[in-house]
Length: 218
Image 1 (tube, rainbow, N blue to C red):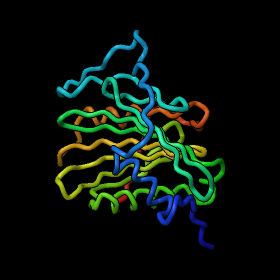
Image 2 (cartoon, helix red, strand yellow; image 1 turned 135 degrees about the vertical axis):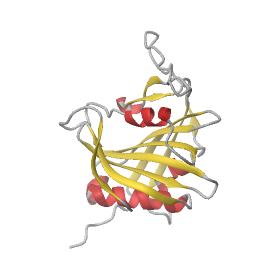
Image 3 (tube, rainbow, N blue to C red; image 1 turned 60 degrees about the vertical axis):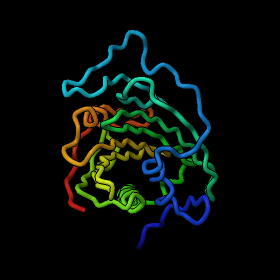
């Protein structure tokens, strides 16, 4: 019996098309919100031995944490869909060598339960890569604190690579993405991706830190 798809359309595009735009269109318009201090005064910056920017602890909406370059830009937007409003909090930072993006998209309660997690992750990955006119280089399932997710790397026609992680917890979707020149993933981007921790309320039983569940070429 086929699993129902999640239909949260803001118009003709489906959820699977619209949501990856948070990743692909990092400069999406939205109401700017005040940027709080990226970390408490007592938190030390963590310089990267590869010469990348220092990364500092940052807490996003709802309590998730991630290491980001200092003073990231923030924006928020609400999309009205057929199943109710979807709230997006977007955090961005970058330099001449790499761009960092973290976001949380909060969906109406229960709306993500209409499809299997694997089907959602497959759809989000495929739509994101299609939207950026990219080619998938690698893909595998991951989890953090028991929360299921997907990591994938794709190349775009301009010669850049994007390594992204998408996690689903409760009614929220967490997206992390690093963009960099084609080649090995820079150490600061890897540290950024590995640093993500979900809010305690959405974390399931499981050890802290991201681990690979299985590898799969897609």
